Image 1: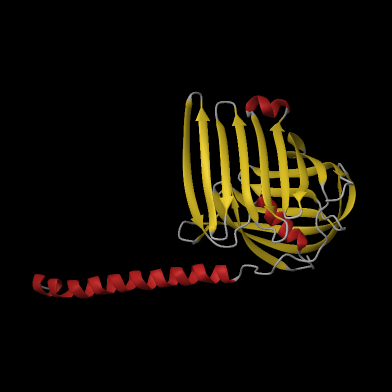
Image 2: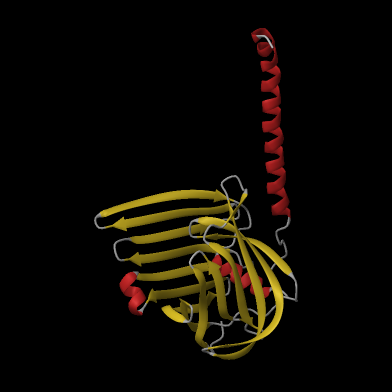
Length: 279
């Protein structure tokens, strides 16, 4: 083939190239729209709302307790709920990896949508404070890192209507009927990223934890990371989790077994106390 013939073919090649790019772009947009169309759009269910409580948990792997934590759920007003938690590594794990953490979330008790969240992580040589402010359009994140005398803050806006945080997602899913083999899909913004959470009710079970023996609803959890262009990506550190919640009027979290990059880790209820005071 002559150089002239090659040159004559270039415009057509460029045209084909851009055609492919456009087609791929349209396919990507279609795929993004497809997963969004599977999201659960139902309002909060009719299951009785959670009573104020104080619960303690232990965390670890292979039967070894590596950390403990406390959770407080209250309803400061008729319109809002509040979830506060604290946790810390303990024992020889703390000597290797010191962490003191706190978490606070406020949400709308009618819609079960988040309003604001603050998470603080104190490590041996740095401190991270993450603040999330939610609106109907999305979330604004401010993340401050402190090392010695140095402090930096980075902000990010993520636009996606109908976001949940960890606390509101838990309460929303808890409010649903949770019939066997039912599936719910919601988008959760947790600290630094958005994730598509696919929650499947596996069935009913009985489980014994430190706090006692309970009839439980057994749930499977899958997570996919939502990218900048709303494309789904595999979660690099999280594979899947099995969750048990009490199959009673409280539906409290009993145990989580999660398969992550270091193996299987767990969280287990040690004790729970309900506040008898009414809202």
